Amino acid sequence: MSIKKIFSPAASIISLIIFIFYLITNSNAEDNNIKYYSKDEGIVSIMYHRFNENKYPSTNIKIDIFKKHLQIIKDSNLNFLNPKNLENDFMTPKKSKKILITIDDGFKSFYEEAWPILKKDRIPFILFVSTDPVGKNGYMNWDQIREVEKYDFTKIGHHSHTHDYLINNTDEEFISDIEKANQIFFNKLGYVPELFSYPFGEYSKFMKDYISKNFKLSFGQHSGVIDINKDKFELPRFPINEKYGELKRFKSIISYFPLEYKTLRPEEKKLDNIHNPPIFQVEFFKNQKNLENINCYSNEGGSWEKSKTKLYNSKLSIEFREPFIPRRGRINCSLNDDGKWRWFGTQFVIMDN
Image (tube, rainbow, N blue to C red; front, side):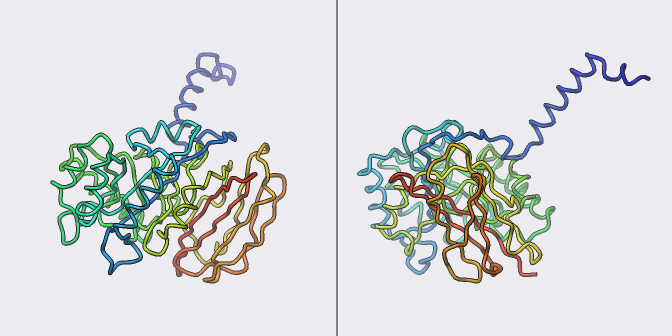
């Protein structure tokens, strides 16, 4: 058979269709995202866990402070984002900033303390649930989850089955955990949630690629403001607790705008000794302004210090002082853009091996 016959017009069209289909179904999150400087006003996503459980300050918020957080948002004339519209809002440049409330784990204290407040004012939120703890001491039961789920301003999200450090598991164990949760969700709610939150905000490239093929959006626990160019399978959130829920800091958080970028490397957020510290580079858009004002801070060596950055041809690189120490390495960058403070953060999981 001749090469000319193989590449006949009909065969070429069929091959092109197959190739396009392959790209669509196998592309990673970054390829699926729109990549242009959008001047998106952004979505500030805020993450809570426990409410009025004062013996857990690292994951708790006092209920009087939580009420003040909600009032600050209202007084700032910011709109809460209904998570039922999240996918559409994500894919559209926002002309005004929105606030997204997320709650992880499904602790009973959320149901008893925060849920009555949110329900009364119909404040929208996502409740991310891990299926194994449901009904156990300190956690909501399925009747309570179904009660929350029935409202038009709420959405239940997927938070794995065990809530273990899944990044430590084998790939097969990770998939098994997610599939077990899928079965339980389907049995208890009649569907599998389409939004995912990584336990502890930790994920590898394999985990993110798997989640991207099975969910619509997913969230980490690195700080930053969501915009149309962020990878939709590692969306940022600002974690809030007793220390980081202080009112002055909270006012700053909701005042931030997105620091948009085209690419961020490395894509692998699970670092072994060979790749620690990573070769870190962020590519911005050519028409972005004031990039020379970027400041970054990172915690390599266990202490937060100003990072040594280099900006050339709209690409930012960081020369790290030393390796990150286990368990988490973080980088936060901010930019004063003519009075608008823009922010993005990154988290790496540092393996001790």
